[in-house]
Amino acid sequence: MDASAPIVGVLALQGDFEDHAESLRRQGLCTREVRSARDLVGIAAIVLPGGESTTMLKLLDVEGLWAPLGRALQSGMPVMATCAGLILLAQHVENPSQRSYGILPVTVVRNGYGRQLHSGTFALRSDVLPKGTTGTFIRAPKITRVGPGCEVLAWRDGDPVLVQQGNVLAACFHPELEERHPVTERFAAMVRANGAGGTAMGGCVGGCG
Amino acid sequence: MTKSPFTKSVPGFTQEEVVSKIGFCEQLKGGVIMDVVNDEQARIAEDAGACAVMALERVPADIRKHGGVARASDPTMIEAIQKTVSIPVMAKVRIGHFVEAQMLEAMEVDCIDESEVLTPADEQFQIDKRVFKTPFVCGCRDLGEALRRIHEGAAMIRTKGEAGTGNVVEAVRHMRALMSEIRALRGMDAQHLEKRAVELRVPFDLVAWVAENQKLPVPNFSAGGVATPADAALMMQLGAEAVFVGSGIFKSGNPVQRAKAIVRAVTHFRDPKVLIEVSKGLGEPMVGIDIHVMPANERYAGRGV
Image (cartoon, rainbow over all chains, first blue to last red; front, side, top):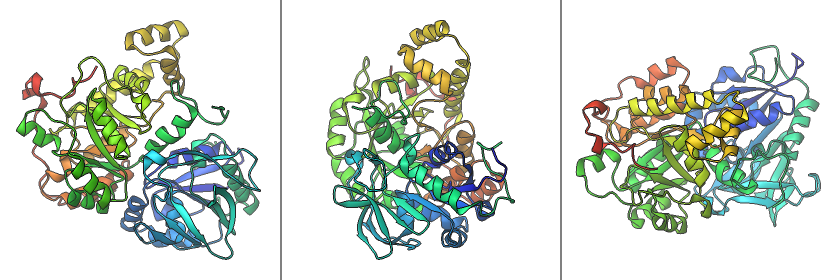
């Protein structure tokens, strides 16, 4: 593995951050768990994983990570957010309303597809993902509004479920639960295209010896 | 069902179950699941950063005190908690009591705990968890119990510990037993794995999966006796991927502060500086019970088959 390979930070306060890190390492990327502001130094991209958004919000505050993470998210580096991560990025959050970074012009309804009993794997309709691509939705947020400048890349029935604005890619579903998923591959390509933002500082965890 | 070559496969689980049932449990990792007995406690737990709540009528410490048969909770209480919080709501059923489980599934509880803390309803069989769409969590004391529960369909395993004691020693014992039995499978040939499968009373494929991957095929959480941030971090360092806290929070002197402290301890379980910070001035922990002076018939961990 190339020592100058870009390091992808994975927010590791709570949730399935390990699955994300593993799926990115399978794409040949380096990853680093982010639990405090110093972990953000030198990363070239960042992932906000699934989990509980309320838990992450509390911890972002007590760790003093809210503002530093906000600056990283708005720096132009590639960002991938899934499920709870999407909720953290959305401009408006409903059911209930809660604080968010608001950098993605979408409205999301938490648990918009119902409780866990309604979770499952569903077909996606998309012009950019391979035919037959599916997404696993787990107590997933529902996107009810997409603002101008934000592109919808995939739908579940009539609902937008994968959106992108600039370097920010966000999904209602969980590509990291699959060993390989086209959405993870798309993000890995974004990271490579963006180049190794900063790789000199800090180490990365696993996968790049 | 078409099988994607890109999804991890778990013996006995369909591909859909791997991603949706086990996938649900993956989302709870690095978090704290708190026992709550009413909507007010549920609100406190959510505000403190719990990643889920476990709704039950009495925390294990009170079940011990009051005695009698402990059953699934009143649906009214569970519904009130579901209306109050936005995080997942779990609830407990008695071992083997599949009708209580059917009721919880119909109420759309997010995860069902077939729990030794309640009085077992069946001494021969645990619930056939495969027929449910709702993910189940079950307790274990060792690898055999863990794999039997997974074979029955559990999507998450937790140590049993000794609930309601505020004493972490049994949870430690169970986690160490589980991890060392997993390590012992490393490098075994098929003949030895076959022998272990017979001893553990589970299919060969499941034992072979664990031998190869050196972990359980479902998330491995800890429960039973966690009372302090240090206890929670101890279980995480021993291999737990998340922590259940029962009586430890709402039976302590300052539940709000203790709940927040344990949430932070689980995120930073390897950082003693954070653990020191969150452990300061927490007030009275729950009063603990020494396991060694506890009569055998008062222990819950031996329940189940």
